[in-house]
Structures are given as structure tokens and as C-alpha cells.
Image 1 (cartoon, helix red, strand yellow):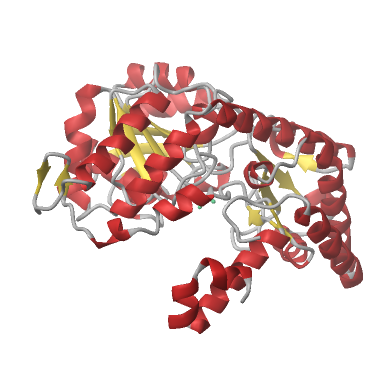
Image 2 (cartoon, rainbow, N blue to C red):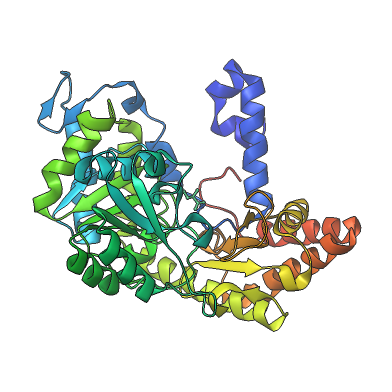
Length: 423
Ligand code: DSN
């Protein structure tokens, strides 16, 4: 029996084909250096909580006011998750039912805007998110999305543009936060603009929720109306989401999530969120969050020293956005070569990218996963070297080097077992 079969004996017996795929994914996650900044390794406890009989229960409604009976335990599970979210983030209200980040953001629009209203967010190619009003998303089709970006000379959010747009367009809702922002988000500056323009301000902290929980990024709480987050990125929980707010917005948000948008909550996910939030309240999680940032800064320095062009010149958080134009290797070709070398990244547009989103100029990397495995700043020069060699090899078609790097990566990864994976 393999370690994977021992870990999932019923699955291995009932569906060997599927079990083999799970085992292969476990090996892939164990042997590779995972640098996608929105991914992580959950703990064995979070994994176990997300695979329980809580799966079997319908619970439309909220604790104490459900549409189905038999909620004696489920109500307590959800209340635990809610109370822990409130404590970890210092908020009045938390809703832990959104299925993921996009439905959570859709619920925010449902709570505060009408179809056709103007909404504002960061443009996707500048580092925003589809659901911040980008045209191809329902949020850009059903609302009138106006979009801000970053300055071309600094790569930093252009607050003059944000203020000018907000005062001119008077959006109902402003989103701050995004998916490719390597710098600290100035929630206070957004708060001032939202108050001036009369908008509801939403901080989408999906990427940095764990950093906020661990004190490694300033909290949006004093400055924003609503906080939207997924639970599976730096927060290291299951794939899910939460909405948080002051008491005054609690009712509108709850109504928007259920019955506005969703049916029964995924109770197994709620349970795993509760476990992740308990972990996030421990002193060791503060160490983790600060180590994520220290690793990203060390990696950025090491990449700059090897001639890489980093958007905004570096990072303040867990994420690095690399413009590969000076290396003359397109982002997609680099990402695929890195994948063959056992280094998993995603290709990404960079601000003002002359190339198309499906074949852009950059790659996006981050340190949440490698930090969960215990890698520290002293390992970042090695990581930067691998990236440097692999990008050069991508340019010359040198498959031998990629194969050699893959073996080196697997060697180092074997010394740092990942949480949650069978050994
Ligand atoms: N897909 C997420 C990311 O990778 O950043 C955003 O939704």
C-alpha cells in the first residue's frame, strides 16, 4: 500500500482510478516548489474537518433561524466559525457562508447596488479582480464598471486617478484590493475617497487575509465598510470565503448571501474555516505571516540582483510580479518551462502590458506555500537561481537544464515536508 492509499483506504478500494489521481496530485504537491501566490498547503486538521459527515446536512438560513431541522451541531459549528472570524479580524459581524470569493463579491453588489449602477474597482490587467467590475464578468455586465489602475512610472496605485474617477462617476461601491498587487494597500487613502464620494468601500483582502490576521499587513477595519475574503490563500483554510463588516451592514450582507444568492451553506467548509481561524489565532501564525513577507522580500532582492524587472521594484507582502520583457521570454513560455522544472507559477499580465492576457509579459509568484513548508530567507537565493536558470533555459530551449533543476527542487522539497500531505 502507498502512503496515499493508507491515508484514503475507502477511496482506494471504491474508486482506484480516482484514488490514483489524488495520489498523483499529492506527489506533485510534495515534489514541486509551489509559487502561485494564491495557493497554500492547509494543515491536516483543516483537511480532516473539510471531509466529514457535516457534508451530509442542509442548513439554509443562519444559526438559530434555519429552514431545516436537525441543526443541533451545525449551528454550533457555524457560530464557532463566526465568533473566531470576529475575534481574529476584530470585526462586529462575519458571514462565513459564501461559497468562494466571486460569490462573496457578488453578494456585496446585491447588498449595496442595483443593476445598472456605477461601481468601481481596479482594472484586471492592472492587478484587480474579475469581480471588481471587469467587463467580461457579470459584475461588469450588470453594473457600469469604472476602473482605476497603477501609475506607469511607479507601478503604484494612482490615488489622484482614484479620487478624480470617484468624484466624477459617484460609484455606489468601490472595491480596493486585487490579485497582483505587490505593495501595501493604503486603506486609509481609499477610505477618505469613499467618504468624499459617498461610496460603500469594500476591501477584497483575499490575497492578504492571512497577513492581516498575523499582523504582517495593516488591517482595513478602521477604514472600510465591508471586508471580503477567500479563506484558502494566505489564511491557509479551505476553499471558501467570508464577508465581514460593522454591525450596521450585517443584515444587508446576510440577506444578500442567503436567500439573495445562495442556498445551503457548505457545512464541511464552514467547519474547516473554523479550524483555520483557530490556527490563525495562535502565536505561531503571526510568525508564519511575518516569515511569508520576509521570504518574499528576500526573494525579490535575489531576483533584482539577477537582473529581473519587478513591478513596483519589489514587494511589501507575499507576492512578486515579474515583467520578463527585458529577458525576452514571454510569460507563458517562462511559466511552462518553470513547470517542467518543478517550479509552479502562473503567467500574468503586467500593468500597461502590450501583450494579450492569454500570452502576457509577466509571471506572478509568491511565498505562502514555501513558507508553510518551512523554507526561510536563507533559501531564497537558491529559489531565485532556479528561476533565473529556468527562464534562461526557456529562452534557449534547454530542456536538460530544466530536468536538472527539477531534480534539485525535488531534493530540497524532500527535506521540507508539506503540511497535510501523506509522507
Ligand atoms: N484566482 C485568484 C488568484 O489566483 O489570485 C483570484 O481569484
